[in-house]
Length: 289
Image: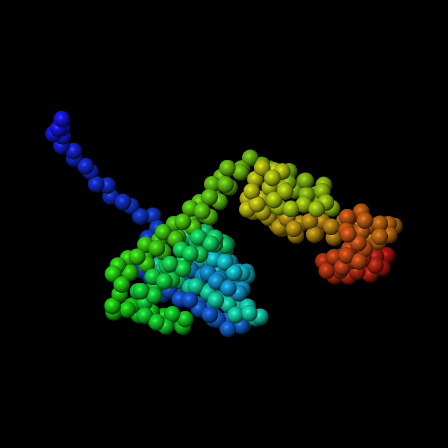
């Protein structure tokens, strides 16, 4: 039996949420020990990935150390500078590109560490970049020249690979964290601070606190700093020093105080106190008597 049916299919326009219309460069740098860059900024985003070694990053939104596998973005016109390890050579992937998506701002404020599959994606981007741009690939240049003869579709492939890579990162890191934080709003930070006050001499971890109060590490750290002005670790350290000073003003021996604060040994307590109070427990006791 034959059916004579006319089917009028409708094409749907596909929208783009994260587009990379322009790419400035695709570099693989092998920097010598101690290499540093001057402060710089440019009107496009810059992807930085540590392939090997360590890197000290200084920017308007993040300052800290990235080790092997670390990834961070500098936003357009964001002042930044890099300093490589002073003990081992550092290799980096740096890609400059234009993108107006606000979702990428997540990666300008905190680094993430890429999985093996994500690193393989990044390697494909670098390989495709060699089909688009002419060498040198390991020398900083402000105007990387395109090859006159390119592999068919290389520019489109490079752009697509970079867009897909970035969309994957946003889905995995930025949006998932936002979702987690939106779900974890039923705990009271005051309860956590009170718990830490009551148990600061006991060994506790961020994962344990997050589990006990039904939240996640990032939300816990953020809300704790807002409430106390300190990190959880910094708060516990200050609490131990405060209580130690109060006990040193009394008649208990240094050995008894170290034991009460659950330090492993008296020497460890003395080292801890001197580091954070500036003097040894014995010297502090003499000062206040």
